Image 1 (cartoon, rainbow, N blue to C red):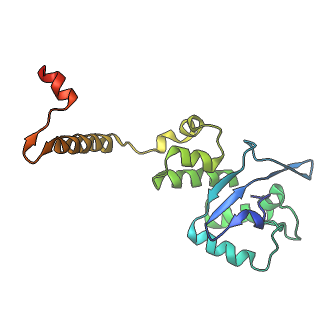
Image 2 (cartoon, rainbow, N blue to C red):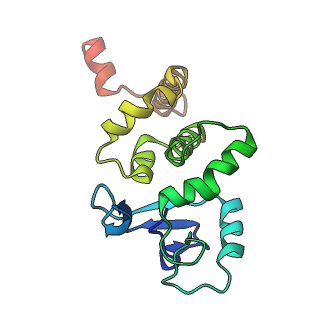
Length: 179
């Protein structure tokens, strides 16, 4: 979040390109690649795109989307102390952390029906296995849906074998009848 620059936002397509990360090392901002060393795109909900557009009006492409009070890179410790933690207390969400918001975004994506590969990409996980290990319990039990899809597939295949009242013999049916 602190390394995100305006040039990496596409508010029309509602995407943020995560191309850079920043960490605080002894009070100094150190820029590097994201944790997987891979750029990735993250979706931006429509309501947030509208708010971001208003927030960024008049800014330049190289400006940080979320800057420190006096400009420049936002340091997590200062952001937590001056903005985030007071907002958390005021909202009654004691214990909420910026990283917990990442988990919330993943949970909302899963609840919205996103598949594991989309969530993996969004979070920058190296593998879908890692995403499933962390969030697998949130994916809905879809056994009934799978059974219904199998029933529909079988019914569709059976219907396609009957043409004009004449029953065609498929290879599977031919071997079952000994033909």
